[in-house]
Amino acid sequence: MSLVKEKFLKLGAEYAPGQEVRQNTNEVKLRGEKIPGTPVDFSHGDVNAFEPIPGSLDNFIEGVHIGGEQAYTEYRGSKMIRENVAEKLSNFTGTTINADQNFIITPGTQGALFLAMGSTISRGDKVAIVVPDYFANRKLVEFFEGEVVPIQMEYFHTNTCAGLDLNQLEDAFKAGVKLFLFSNPNNPTGVIYSQEEITA
Image (tube, rainbow, N blue to C red):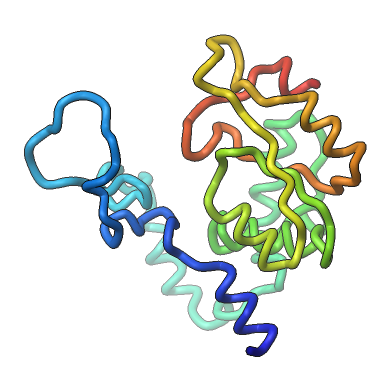
C-alpha cells in the first residue's frame, strides 16, 4: 500500500460529524423522553437558521462586476480582505496584526486547521489533544504522522471550569509534547475554559 493511500485511510470518516445517519444510533443510550418527528442534523449547520448578512447580495453583484481579476488571488488571500481583517483583529486584540505577515485567509476552518497543523507537526512529534475534542484534530495529527497524547477533561465533575487536567498536561510537556491542540468552546461538549485554566 502506498504511503499516500495509508495516510488517507487513517483520516477515516466513521465517526466524523455528519456521519450519524450512516451509523446505527438505535444502540445509543439517550437521556429524557424520545421526541417524535423527523430528526434534524445540527452538526454541519444544515438547518436554515440564519438569514444572509445584510449587504451580501450587493457584495456578490459587485464581485460579478469585478470579473476575472479576482479569479486567482495571492496565496495568502486577497490583500483587500487581509487588510480589512487585520484592522478588525488589531482592534479586537489590542495588538498590531500585519496583513502581509501574520495570517492567511483560508476557505473555512477545516482549511485553516489543516494548514496550521501541517506547518507545526512533523513525523514523530508528540501532540497533546483534549479528550474529548473535535473529531478532525486526532485524525490530522495521525495524517501528519504525529503521536497523539490524550489529555483528560472531566467536564461532568465541575461547575466552575472545563475540568481540564492541567497536571496531566504539564507532565505531557515534560515528556516531550511539542504542541497542545484544543477547541474553545470545546467541541463536542460545549464547555468553555475558565480564565484560570487558560492562564495556567
